[in-house]
Image (tube, rainbow, N blue to C red):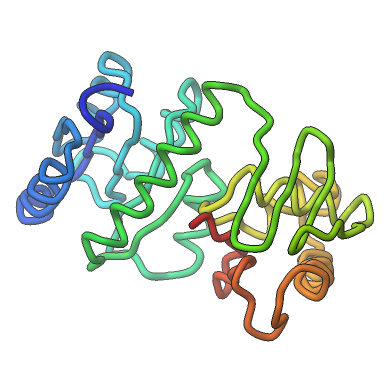
Length: 231
């Protein structure tokens, strides 16, 4: 990682938001590059190799979704969308286009910092190419051995249940849309079968959650998809 905690590229045209984020991030030990335009943001991303990109959708020169698409043509850097657009279809479009996360303005400094920590962990995991052992409270998932434990007791999952769990674990903390889950777990031909995700998520919750009606591991993002809690 660059700098103390990491180098963050902020692509945001609103001066007040840039000021808030500058104070927040620098006080936490992050190095920061700021740019108010999409074109300059693309240039900075290519030349400075940031650890995380914070991207506003409402930019003066390019739509943020276009910037996102162009970044994803060559970069796997974690991208967190910052936007005043609250419609579910905007969130789904950004996430399906390759964003790692989506925060709707206004948001708290604590929430942003938590999402950045998750993004940095994803980057470190991807860079190391390690098959980690994921541990969260009483849940343990050994991805290399393909074994799942709850309170040190092995839990047997069907192949589809395990494939869904493994994809959630590898992307823990990241919002995954129904379309992404269907494509990765069932294949592109099932992209419109959203009920598959609901059914199998229910099965995972019954096997792994202490109270399936109040899940603590598998968090529903209404109208968008699911997020595996990471901390």
